[in-house]
Image (cartoon, rainbow, N blue to C red; front, side, top):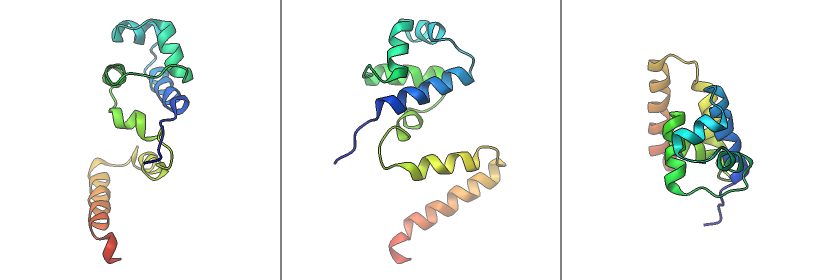
Length: 111
């Protein structure tokens, strides 16, 4: 497997979610039991996160770990491009869309 985590992209994603929720680095750090400096390093991609820290940050930001990681792993642009399309869509329509994608994925070899 030749995929590496882009820690700079991961840090930007964390920073974007943090600022969307109007949290400072100090506030996020306090809740996650980390220093503001540590949060700054994570957001700049100069510090590698442990799974525990990544999980705590995801919980505080109310996002899944995969949400933070998917955009940070090379060659995974399909999933990150679908999310903005569904962001403001009616929940039932979004579920219908996802069910259609599941059916297509299950039958991709037959197409």
